[in-house]
Amino acid sequence: MFITFEGIDGSGKSTQIQLLKEWLERLDHTVTVLREPGGNVVSEQIRQLLLDSTEHIEPRCELLLFTAARAQLVSKVIRPALKAGHIVICDRYIDSSVAYQGYGRGLPIDDIVRINDFATAGLIPDITFIFDLTVDDAAKRAGFRSNDNKTKPDRMEQSGDAFFERTKQGYIELAQNANRNIFIIHAGDSMHDIRDQVETIVGRFL
Image 1 (tube, rainbow, N blue to C red):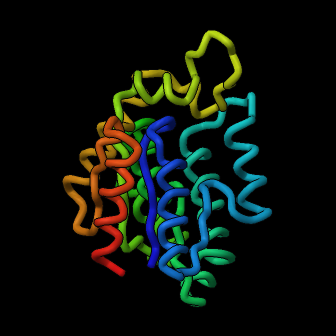
Image 2: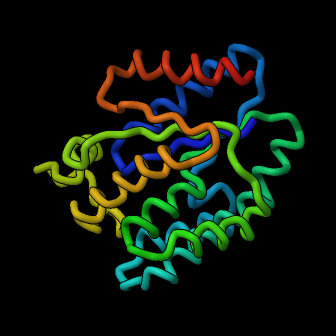
Image 3: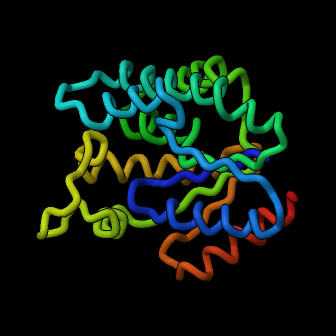
C-alpha cells in the first residue's frame, strides 16, 4: 500500500505520519517512511538545491527538479519497497507539484500531470490525505513568523502568503476533482482526533 500526505508547510503532516507509522507497526506491518524531495542520495542533493539555494529558480526549472527527484525516489526506493510488501508513507508526492507549481506558480496543470506520469511510470497512491489549514495558522505552526527567529524559512517557504493561498485552494480543488482516494483532513482538529480519522480510513484498506 502506498499512502501520501499533502498540505501546505506547517499543516501538521509530519506528526501524523509518525503516529500512523507507529500504529501500523503495532499491527505487524513493515513501514517505509519517506519525504519529498529526498529519500536517496540523488534526491537529497536536489532537495538541498531547491530549498537552500539563494538563486532565483525559474518555475519550469523548479518543477523539473522536483520531478527529477521524484523519479529517482520512485525507481530506487518506493517501487522496491512496495514489491517487498512494505506499506510506503510519503510526505508529499505528485499532488504537491500540481498544487505548488500548478496553482501556486501558475504552470499548466496538464503539463505537470504528463511530466509526473512519465517520471513515476504511472505510480499513483492508494490513499492520499490532504491536510487543510489556514495559511496564517500553518505559518505560525511552522514558526515562519516567530519573533525568536529560531526557524529560518527555506526558499519555498519564502514564497509569500498569496502563493500559499493559491496552493491551499489548489489542494482543495484537486481533492474535489480527483477520481481516486483523496481525503481532506481538517488540520485544525486535535492531534488525537486527526490520528483517529487517519487510522480509520487506512484501516478500511488494510
